[in-house]
Image 1 (cartoon, helix red, strand yellow):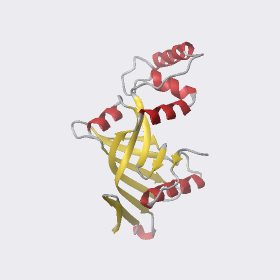
Image 2 (cartoon, rainbow, N blue to C red):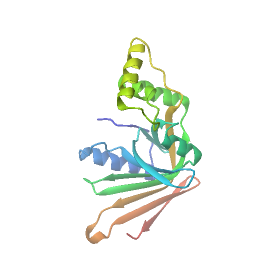
Image 3 (cartoon, rainbow, N blue to C red):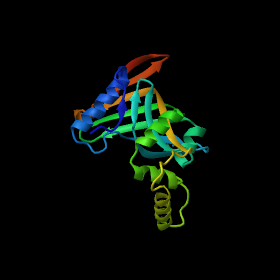
Length: 200
């Protein structure tokens, strides 16, 4: 099953990220492309949640969300974020720190148009992180929207789109006996990646 798009010319630690995700997929990990993303609010308080990787390239990792939800607002205000992948079946972890920027409107449009219609409806009617009067009111809004657009193409809401995380550092962690875990830290200097080993 294909979970995300990837470029053919991946290299360095970005290629290794893809290889570890593929290893998790081979080992039948559920949602091997799921990653935790941590951002901070204007008060400097951290917030974490899971998102799905949708594209990987040498430039970075792309996920999609509502720009006006808590996550989107935090990232726009303070674009430095941290990502974590962890797979119990392979006993491996990846930690990534980097800066976020919005992807092009074309990429957001293309991905939105590729989504199942139900997902398009959800993105259109749900104002992410806003208070609901009741869950039933959201379901009602969804049914009404679906009826209104039954014979129409659904356009991407302008508040919904992708973020590119451009890594500044990538750490690979492998579980080892006696807790002597192997840690490789890659940091980028201009366009060159440098690697050092870290004590567990």
